[in-house]
Length: 460
Image (cartoon, one colour):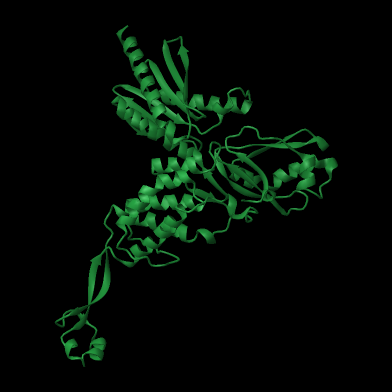
């Protein structure tokens, strides 16, 4: 268990407004030498001291009130992670600010690791040079998260052939190849050894040193993933892969190492496996500094995964991250070179544009925040810009947000000047594996309804 005294504040990501922290309470606990009569100035100084770290983790602090009645609240974004903080009165390090996944069970990472395993994509974290975290290793990405990524890349490696020449010394009945004459002279006094020549051979084999080092890292990951610190759901998910890899690596004898050299000649599969293996080997020696994970990218890949299956079931095809290039004789520095929706579902002559936004709108349906309105206005304008590339009279775009359960609603925009329609569906998707089938069934039904309406319009 971590010590709560090390944590300045903990909040889930995608929170529009956290609980308010009173300046007087902060003065008693954290800013003990601050003057409580002007605590508002100290809170502003606190924000200024830590502005770069707050920006790194996507946290926006807000001051409420004035003078002695000043309080502070926070808005979190799509990042999770931890940052160390400094006190405004002394400049010394105090507790850590921690942003956790918003939608989890008993363990903060298990739902996301299930999604990671499903997508086959990495959840990679970024680090920032900073003071060490006061909470130490309690709020760093857990080792089993890195171990799962190693299992996934190793699974890809063992499906390919990885052979290398190893130098072996074999006994030959005739002097062929490079003979170790020194060794031969030491042993030839025995009659039975006079026609046994120690000959050096280069043998092409998978049983080489680097594969044995990979096997050593696999054993470390296996031990971590099957330990009591790893959530049961993760063990259940990863156990078949571990059994498969153990069978494939049965003949490889582990060789202990602290580093596996990455070579320019290595194939992408080998290089990925070595890089991830070195992360495992160095895990306990890496300083616990500020870090973050961007789940907006994970949500985008998750949405693409679902719509890819929907496209197959409906007889269409999915075009992920399709780019609409711009052409101009002269570009300004701030102009966009292309537009890129997260995905386009194409069926016959119908194009459906899909954009994934890892934002908190469907968790704040009754919040009239201007920030929420402005963000949603930007999202609507973006998806409408994408739908303008469709030639059909009725255009369809799907805007995807994370939510507690699968849901969908439709808003129709109508242009009276030319009788053109744009329909925008807002789709709520939980980041949970057990809701995927429900989401796919709903989307197939909605797509069939849209196609029926299009057919009726064309027949009029």
